[in-house]
Image (tube, rainbow, N blue to C red; front, side, top):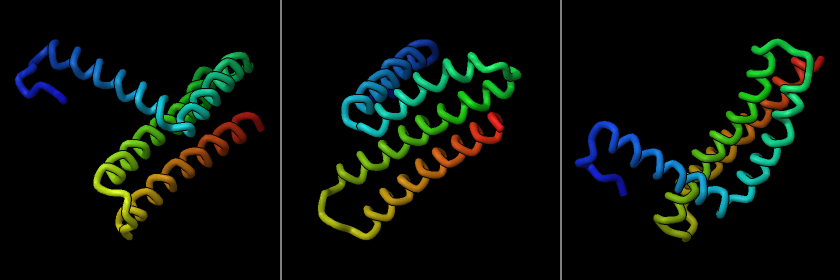
Length: 119
């Protein structure tokens, strides 16, 4: 848990280590995130290798980063919902479905971005 008394550089350092813990937890518990990291590792060298402008390369790589970012947020929502309880509740299901829809939308956007630039 964050130290509410930490200020300045100490707060930034603490935030960095909390973020690393978040990446580790997501990697450990979320297969979708691991798959998206593999997608990033495979597609980034391809984007860099292609004879494209820097903006096109950034758009291609950035669209995959966006997928991972949305997955991190979706995983956070799912963790909070699961923390509240595992029994079926309409709002819990809705929250998870909306998070999943956000991930799907980011994947579609990545595919559209790559297709538009490659064509």
